[in-house]
Length: 92
Image (cartoon, rainbow, N blue to C red; front, side, top):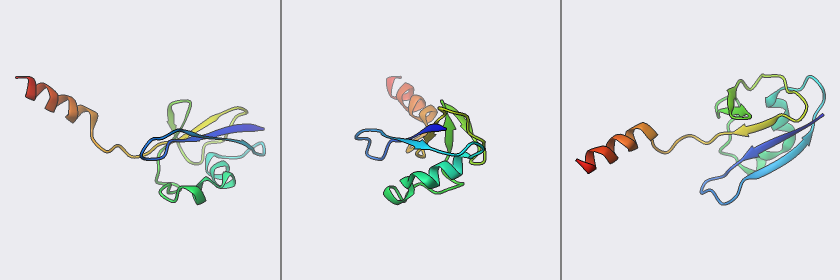
């Protein structure tokens, strides 16, 4: 079955989309390992980096469905709530 693996490196230039053929019963972790994206981006740590499917965070052990889009998330550089608070304070 076919799935997509998506990652946007830092600094964001352009997203990388890898179409990958995987076996039925494959989990997120296995698909990412098979894609060789870990060799391109060593900052991705299996089991620690957050992943999602179509915008929903999932476990690395979640079983895949045909045409799932695996998204590998980078850690936030700043808390969006804190940025909004600072913006409001500067406006006062």
